[in-house]
Length: 100
Image (cartoon, rainbow, N blue to C red; front, side, top):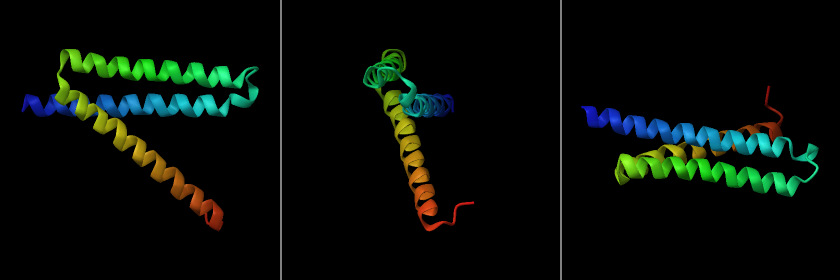
């Protein structure tokens, strides 16, 4: 039973990393028009986001094992797919004019 809890924690960590990554991307893109050097801001944001996420995946690999990394990547990817699907359906509703 404790193994199931450990995998659930790894999956949750992946979801949280995905939230961090996508929220960081959202904030970066939202404020690009106000940046004096937008390309530099985008580059630095990308490097920082990747460094943090990959560092956390490395930590999982080092101390929990590759199975937990795969579980965390699954959580990260499923969140990404969910957000993309959710945003694309919102965009389609806006095109049809049925968004409230």
